[in-house]
Image 1 (cartoon, rainbow, N blue to C red):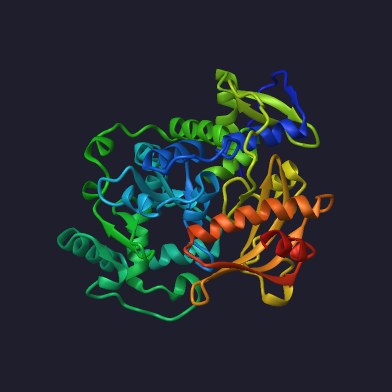
Image 2 (image 1 turned 30 degrees about the vertical axis):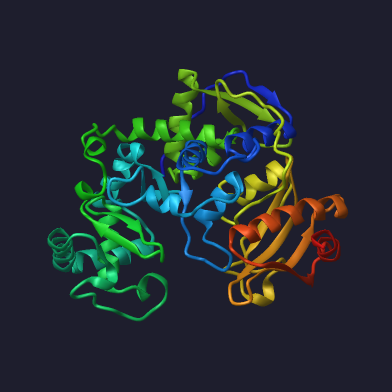
Length: 415
């Protein structure tokens, strides 16, 4: 492992813990009121300009996270707007941003270094990666045949392959060989993809998906692209450690430290110290902390980019958050699909939610109050937000279960 490059010694400015929260909330597009008029595609563009990368996830117990993240920032909107912005010629494309993500098509050149690395492969001691490499090498002919089929056929889902080679197993191994081949070609950039309304990934050649003017743009060197992505991450995060910046677009910590040092040297990033943070932090040169002016409470998807990283969420909000979707039922503390509630600059509660389509009700299976928060005030704010979400999901009522100390107050507020 290479040595960590030293970060330049520049006098750091001081931020209070609260100012850091303000910067983070502003960077994520959560500081301002939601649009009063009907939400249009331009509003979605503004959100994407703020967050940069919109994580995708298949869990649909309430609504898929890509739609919830936009609801948090915009309130009720037509999810068809997002579908219309993806697909062939769309202004958003799917790739590995922060996990599987939607990204502005204009930044496609900034991810070509990642595509090139997938193609080239890198030495690794990971047994998992070694197994995947061995699979690719042993299936090279089949992968080429899948690529040729997509070239001839056009838009193709894994289920539509003439020879999908279905298999059994866990996680990656459960996927058909055809899907593995398609996803490998997607990772290398030899195929592009988008999602159907049923969340099925459809693949085609990049020249039939990505606009020609974007494909024609020069491919920057890896270090140049990484600097651009880390600068974008700094804007979206508001204030961040080098580790936070690296995690946003999944750049290796070693590479991120080198690029951060270069960005500090160029003046694009400004070192700061944050009250209570042990590690040095950075913000964009022009960023200034301002208190959020959104009065309405905001429910946050478990996969919202404000709270992606557990340690950062704890540092910013004193809020210990764990996504429990993948935790066995007996070990869950708060519930299966738990949404934190942001009020002002604090995370004050969390709710285990389910959209029960058959009963046409938004089920609050658990309503948990954070220490020090006022139950009546939080219940009132949460009730308004839950009712707004209920209407957006097309459900007729909100049903509150017994779990959580906030349940009684919330039930009263909803009445």
